[in-house]
Length: 263
Image (cartoon, rainbow, N blue to C red; front, top):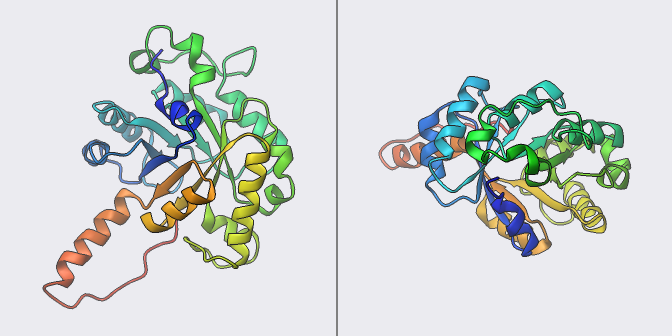
């Protein structure tokens, strides 16, 4: 089976630089894949991407050495299994709030006896290799998002789930969970920043890598220095918006409208 290069990055104590895809286009995915990311995550939760889009985007990413991942829209086994069958090498699952949900997620990613994933890796065999089924349980990353008030009370319970690879922080939903306005790149001393540090501490305690979504490369660098081993910066949609707005603003006055805090 094709090795998951992200596992080697984590093992060596380095950080994965992850890109985020929200635009349902194989061409934009291919363009992003040629920009030097370690991995690209297809956002099927807040992006405008459905399964046929995602399949073509996975094919486009596969023209490079970038590792393909996907964020599913919910902890739903059918969707998890189907995007794995399409060739995703990592799954980010939103809103994991307790151990039962974490176990359900991990087991949907794994073939028996460790899980209940149904066999039928139609494109996984093409991307991963003919021996895909023998090693998929170990090669595929299973990443639970920590972003609810319940999850904050059950960090060790969630993170001790057998087979879980790592956790991922969605700072906007995390902010909402503790009564704050949704925001990225939270400053030190803010309630959300304190929770981010606390989640990271628990991840290290449970020997899991931790990831976080960032608005800027500068903040992502700060998170790496703090100990995060997976950092996402912006998204394809945000890069398109920022680049276009910057160019147009040099020629005319442009009304600045705040972009959505969704990611």
